[in-house]
Amino acid sequence: MDFTVEEVIDNLGLRALGDGAWGRVMGEEGGAVQNGVVSAYRLITTETPCDWRVVEAEELWTAYMGAALELELASEAGVRLETLTAGSGRWLTVPEGGWIRTRAIGGWCLAGRIGPVQGDGLS
Image (cartoon, rainbow, N blue to C red):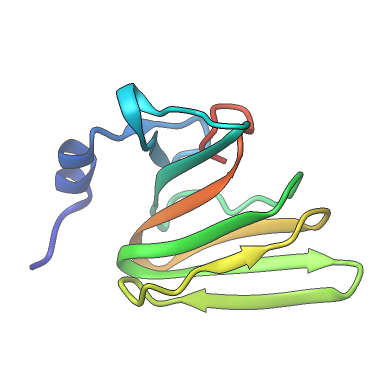
């Protein structure tokens, strides 16, 4: 079954983020934070800017539904490009100390992120 962006936002209770994406911390009562780590939904569209940001501590990323999720990772070892197919169940570990940027390929992607609290916890 295909969902629209609006249906995903409404059904999951996502909120607009400052960078053009949508998100919500998962867990008890709007998002329990344990040991400074959160698990969050992040809805990325083709209009969401894909700016670089520093990875302060190891993160895990997956693509739940929609389009594929592209993660570009930069570190002292170089730049690598990974693509996660939505619904594959595959998680990608993003190591601490590098840079990352994400984008949806060909539509919107509901992604999942487990990692340290950064800003609104949904980075």
